[in-house]
Image (spheres, rainbow, N blue to C red):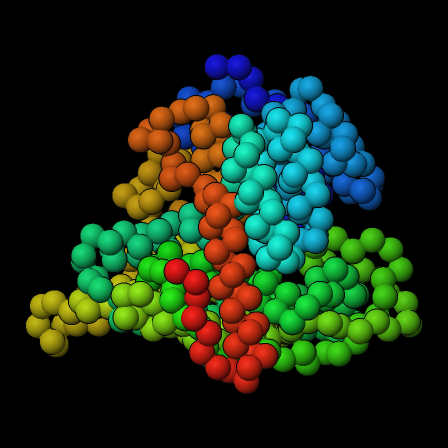
Length: 394
């Protein structure tokens, strides 16, 4: 197999996660990949690109996506920049014959997302979207328990994703705080929660009860570049926040199950608090990102006096972990960063043409990215209509 040259566009928080993932992906499991060459990290803010390239061992840095598209030594590219920039970059990379892994959400508008999916359909190369939490071993294991019938049919699911990266009113304004209703906390962390709801409970057919709140109306302008969720020096000049700090809604699923989702970027004291509870015919399961090396499992079996939730430490028998950890034993911790590693490994395996039966589950296609945005758009419509039920297109 020919070597694969890799690049990452965007040197912020998630961009660094992609860069590190490609570096470590060949050694995650047995060495069946071709040679992976770490070529370039591109960022319009050159100091960030240069620092990330040096930190993660990439050969060079660039300051434009066009340089990545034109480079003959690059085959695989992750796009990890502001949502409104995705379409131009992804379409340009596909036209240049690159394999593209795009961060979620696919774009900032449905029109652009659908155009990107059409471009992906036309391209001879691969275009995938990273839905990273699908690869959290605990969440993947709960899905296995559902699909195997051990938990039985899902009755209802509750997902809460609280973050506090914007809880401080002095947090600088950035692209994350601009855009239409639903492009704030809903698009940022609600996109994760919504695809996980369908990952566990099946296809959603309707949403309702949409409610948004912008609790910090203005934020200071930064004095320099803003990277990821980090804080930066700010001026005394304020700018208007255009989108949602908080969002909540309910879902109805084709199976008859129900669900609720609540997300926030201003939940003080909760830096990255994803919590999932699934209730099914034969029991229930819980996952918390605060304790990613375990799940809580309740099975309706045995004497009533012995029933109750029990802690299941995740380890060798569970999804993604077996054969993939240097210390490959139950109870040795892992967390969110590993999701990017599994994602990168799966993408490289697919690009290399390895058989799916001998690979990790494939990354989602752009059509799933469009579906996720259609669901979020329906939530925004529900909110606009005062919480009314909005049906999703079949």
